Each structure stands twice: as structure tokens, then as C-alpha cells.
Image 1: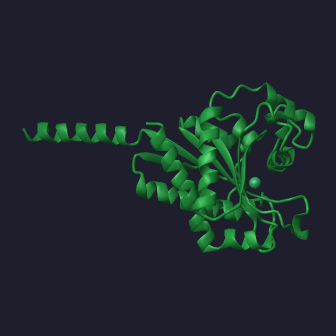
Image 2 (image 1 turned 90 degrees about the vertical axis):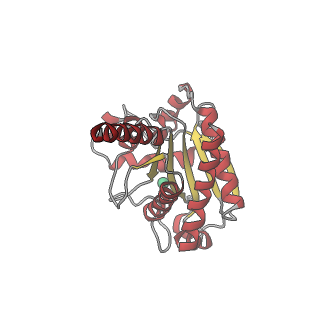
Image 3 (image 1 turned 60 degrees about the vertical axis):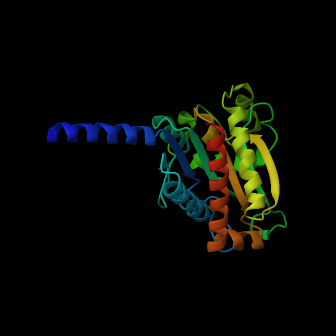
Length: 254
Ligand SMILES: [Zn+2]
């Protein structure tokens, strides 16, 4: 009798836990390790990305227990672009969020440009927004055998981006919907300038087989924006904004 009761309880708890972890979210902190990403006056992109990614993940873990959170990196390590997508695919993720920080071509000469952008993988307009995609994709040149791994893709050549126009993205609608929610929250919760939702050819999104977005938190070479993003307040607000968007998106999918 006691065994039976134990068995029933075990079965119920297993059923509950399998049901309770039905949704998988992959959070990708852009860059890391030998790849610093864009450089600010006092900070590096990789560190801002990681701080916001971890804070966002913590909010999800604490507030939405039926979501399994998987990070492509939790420390300052180098992870190849195609491996980031593979992590999401292997774990059958429901949503993939890649977190980045922007910079203009002026680099450390500084810029007045500011604001957040959220990208989905572009088909028709891959040639637009080429500068951002080129900068984020150039990471692969730090990877061993990148020409082989990415089938001759040259991150600096505009011609390489033609492949994105031929791609069918079946998750485009959901990706764009989530991207819009993120942008709304960056403006309303974090008080950021909303620069909008765009499409571009990001290698990190190319191979994901679920809705996926790439977020640019702001411009690291804008002194005020860098100060905000590097502050505790900034990390708290930006991570909370992404969390609010995720919560609304997930609820809308029910
Ligand atoms: Zn980046």
C-alpha cells in the first residue's frame, strides 16, 4: 500500500514536472571570451550583453517556473555563432533571443545616435541594415575554419547576403510580433528611444528553427547610453523590459 502510494505520487510529480517544463527559452549573450564585440569608452559589449542576459534569465526562472531557461553562455567564454543556433535546435527551443549592444562606424570618436533596435532574420530586405549584420557576423573570422563551416560566407561582402533573400522563414510572423513587444517595453519600461523592428541577415539567426530575434540594447559608443547600459539600474530596466515582452508574448501564444 505504501509502495503504491509512493508510486502514484511519483507518477503525478513526474507528469507535473514534464508538463511544467513544456516551454524552452534560449538566451544568447552575444560575443564573449576573445570576442569582445563592440568597444565602449569604459566597457565592452560582451559584458553588457551577459549582464542583461543573466538578469533576464533570472527573472524568467523566478517568475515563470514552467519555462526552462537555457543560456548559450553564462560566463565570459567564446561560443561560435553556429553553435549558438545548434544549442537552441538541440533543445527544441520555443524562442531564441540573442542580446547585443550596437555601435556606429564612428567607434570611439563617439556618437549622438542612441536607441534600441530589434531584428528578425531578413528575407526581402537583407540588403538594408547591412552595416549591423556585417558587424555582428564578422565574429566568425575569429573561428577556426570559418570559410568551410559557413560555406564560403564572407561577412564583409554584400554579395554573401543574397542567400538571406532566398530563405523561407516560417517563424517570421511570431519573430516580428515578439520583436515589436520588446521594442515597446524598451520604450515604456526602460525609457529608451525606440528605433524600431528591422530585418537583416544575421548568421546567428539563420539556422534557428524557432521564432528568433536579435536585440541591440543601445549604442556603446554613445557616452550617455553606455553609462546607462553599464549601470545596475540600466541592466535591471533592460532585463525587466525583455521579461515583460516575453511574458506578454508567451501569454498570447496560449
Ligand atoms: Zn554584437
